[in-house]
Length: 131
Image 1 (cartoon, rainbow, N blue to C red):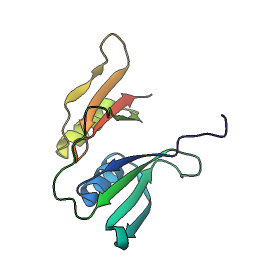
Image 2: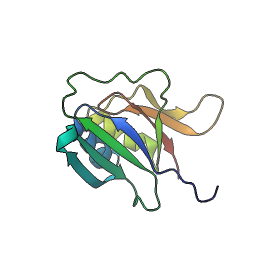
Image 3: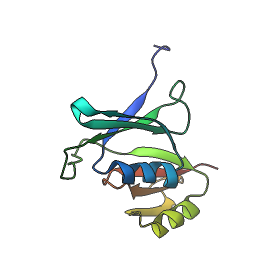
């Protein structure tokens, strides 16, 4: 199965501009491409840390007529992002008004330093300190 690889994860977002700001400015990803589909009344924006040709990315789907926040459901968990200094990262995010439901610290029953933050739609993003 070596020809298989993860391409992207799709998240439905209520406010595309807020989500793009979160994932690009605050999480350090780049906007790779953005396409409006007038006939379907939706926009797809792909963000990531590398090119789609060799890196898994996030697909942010904005349905133009969606007025209410999406229900995240009980099956979805989180995405994880490695960061070099989790404490400084969380301080920066908190100053920007990002919710941090689980502040940085060692994970329970382990030594890896983690934190959980929420994107503008309430999706959980696990930060993992990687030095």
